[in-house]
Length: 446
Ligand code: SAH
Ligand code: SF4
Ligand code: F3S
Image (tube, rainbow, N blue to C red):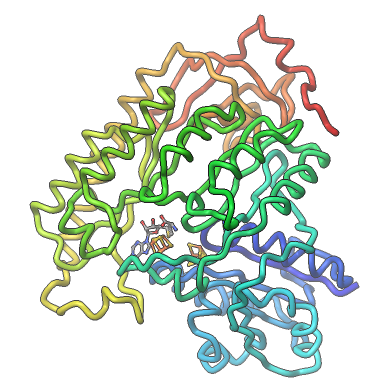
């Protein structure tokens, strides 16, 4: 059997796509390998969202050469493949395949041709494509990534994603439910529904609230998460579905990007500071235990000190449980690159603001976490802790990382723990002795 090695960069959507690609290739007779040495095919599934994501891949493509023989096929897939197309073939003589996110169905054929020495790009968008008939090869032991929407119809002025992923399309509810049943039958009890603006999902009759209720009603599902929603698409109906569906976890990742209305306008985010705050308030009113994480960009063109202060004050006012912070990166072809050059924020200013934002975010998150000490949480044990062989890494419904003792505990188990320590960002949890019953297999596998 020919062997395929695949590396994934970027967001969960790319992880899900990698699982689909490996499933498709397994069906076509390829064996997956975790070692690039001796692989017949090496695929790099790429991200284009920021310049440094692309730089990493370019470096890695060179690196991978030392694992290749003359016959190894090297392919680039994903968002960078879509963005650069044939330019990648010109830039790297060893790359023989460039395949965008809507063209994975052709992957086995394209690889066959490449093994015969051809070089090809496949970057057409396909508005019908959801890979519904692919059997994903899943790597996560306890949760399943389930794409429910592909593409994006927003046009945030900094963002490359609409160009790399194409127009938004939603997958049929029945297909999402079927896949959820399949992953439960395979022994998983958590699903993460994926889409660029996942809560704008619609099949023409129902909305994202209907989808949440349908997935949450699948027998054996204990946790439903989703990422990333757009603040504008949180109707009261969707929020009610979150609150009323017991499996939907008490966590939302709600990208804010900026706390300044004038900045949000330049980003064309389509909400104001007040609109975002109101969205947070509506969600907290419906789901009191909700934890909220976010994405924030620093140094978008024209960012003034006052606008940056608005972001800091919004961060403090909301009290995010955590935030991913990014320095603005100009992406070729996006509207932000056509803004007047004098609006560019100097690097040293960006650096200073970025550090300040990170300091504020960490301080708030530490303070919120300290307050949780002594509380109890149900955690799902996910994997071995990165350091420390005697600890396993678990996650609470409200998305806190909790280290639990490995002894007597298995990956995939639910545990009731008391939060007994925190580094400020992660917790240590002590199993609550009276909770043995929760640790028995409770999955109703149908
Ligand atoms: N679809 C999601 C996120 C897509 S990209 C959403 O709408 O929220 C993930 C995050 O990367 C974004 O939320 C944003 O904070 C960041 N990002 C996107 N483009 C960027 C750019 N050009 N420079 C810096 N950060 C960017
Ligand atoms: Fe990018 Fe905006 Fe679409 Fe998110 S909503 S993927 S940030 S264009
Ligand atoms: Fe990156 Fe594409 Fe995801 S650009 S963030 S891999 S949608």
